[in-house]
Amino acid sequence: MNFPLGDLTAIVGVLGDLLAESLSMDAHRALGDEELMDAVRTAEHLGRWVDAARLTLAGEVGRRADSDFGDDRMTSRFGCGSAAELLERATLISGATARERLRQAKCITSRTTSTGGHRPAPLDRARAALAAGRLSSDALATVADVLRPIEARCTADDLALAETELVLAAVGDDTQAPCSIHELRIMATTWALYLDADGELPDEQHAERMRGVRLGRSRRGLRRFSGEVTDDVGAQLERLLDAHLNPRVQDRGPRFTGPGQSDEEDDEHILDPRTADQKRHDALGSILSAAAAAAETPTLGGAAPTLIVTVSADQLERADGVAFVDGPDGQAPVPASIARHVGCHGTIHRVTFGSDGAIKALTVTDRVFTHWQRKAVGARDAGCVIPGCRVRAAWCEVHHVIDHASGGPTDTSNGVLLCWHHHRTIETSGWDIRMGAGVPQVRPPAWVDPQRNWRCANRVLHRELERARSA
View 1 (cartoon, rainbow, N blue to C red):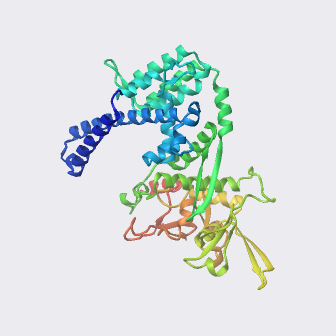
View 2: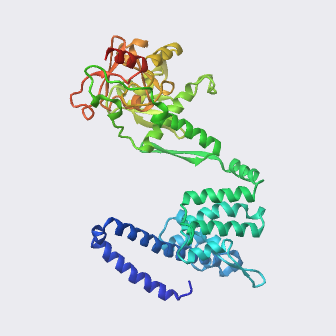
View 3: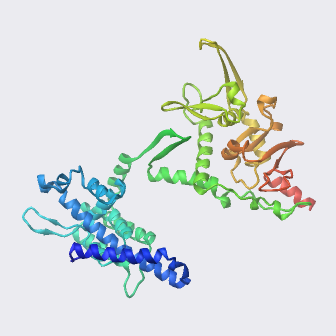
């Protein structure tokens, strides 16, 4: 990139005006499909030139901010504490973007040795391909993330060979087309395993050192959940989520259409309005509820690690009532519906306070279904009774059809299986549940069935067999 900075500024100005005029006139809407794809590829190629300029210039900023410059460091001259802060202020990008840009730029930035000699960039072949507009910043990051951690344990020749092959795979040539980022990552990982066959221990030590999970404070009813888990923990969590969310894994058997039943009543036609992220969240809620009730789970204070929700009697029955859950910063307010959800399948402790705040009485109401009752209800329902839901019995909660507070017994004739999501939203989702001759029946909301007809709950194999015989 041997051109004056003034020329670069002028080029960007002219190109920016042309692009802004073209996009403002909606010229792209008149393009045919093939022309649109050509335009997408052209814009991406243009973006690679821009990325190359960004990283090259960011690398020079990082070099001049190095401690080798002493008091003449660029950051000192501009009153910034780091190169990332300088980039952030100059470009108005986020701090995270500035740090990532500097991290990638280190791979393509050459250095001057203490004797005045020239030291090439760590990934000099990738730098050349990037400068030529052929290598994307994503491809650069993929190669760097795999090769840089092992460079101290490999010879320079081996690393150069791996870098050459990976860059060639990413940009392609006359004999082969460029590979995707996914394919490039697999190839890079393969090279790393080949060059650093004994490198598992350092990686394992890094994973053990960096692992962690963080729970943030409650804000508007949500708490930020973040962190990094080891590969085995991540894989186990993925398997559990897949067990909840994969309909192929959870298919309960063949489907039959019985007498008087139309195809429109098929469970498969009932759409789930939740996003994929929301489904994973609700599956995690089911997993945590099941884990808390498991016999193998360690106890807290002699009891299972139970979610504690407190609510006053007058707030409990209100649609806009407020309850409180225990959190790291004390009690956090939540809707009273959460208290009703928890109380439906848990033990209730009713505490009576005097006017001075002293405890006057404590009444414990155990409304938890026994192990054998859960087994029986699970055998009958096989899973969540809401049609279309695929959550299996082992991950469901037992719901009182007639609320315990209204006189509903904790008995199999009054209990049905609901997944964490449907149990928590049963009051607001529009689904109604009743028992008919000991068998649960459900009534869909109007958006599912405008007639709101009562129907059998989610289909179970032995009941389907009877329908097939009747048909």
